Length: 75
Image (cartoon, rainbow, N blue to C red):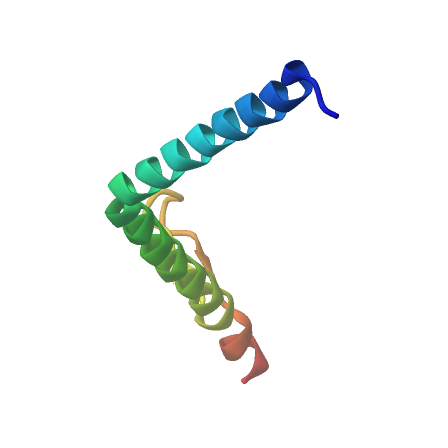
């Protein structure tokens, strides 16, 4: 037979973990549009990195210096 103490603590821990998981889900639902925007922004930046590597980029911050890119160097 189990004592009351042995049955209470697993229930308490389960309840605490359930509340933590529920709070994380609620925060995820609230922050969902922001997360989607950041994910789309990250995808756009990754596409720009690959484009810069292939075709080069002119930097306005580096006094007109530019990176030529791999495609112009190949031709």
